[in-house]
Image (spheres, one colour):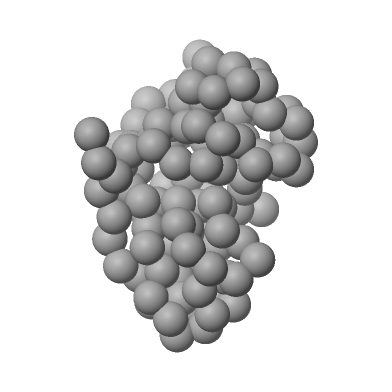
Length: 116
């Protein structure tokens, strides 16, 4: 399967924020409900951002995420697996340390459930 990507105009300098969730206004997502995809490129303010809304992607972990864990989005904009949050993906790669880039996640921003 190929990634499904939508273009979003960067509403801020996102060059150092690749692999973070993005909102439709082109800024870092403030919550799972606002996230439309994962930033797939380094974009400056006003540039096109490729937002992966479905498929496989790297991801920036705000906290340690175990292999196989469900992934959500923190207020800081980083993906995180936190009990009770809306699910936007799953870590299908190795465990990821806080602040590290996860090598392999699957994502679907069209909707999601709740981590039990």
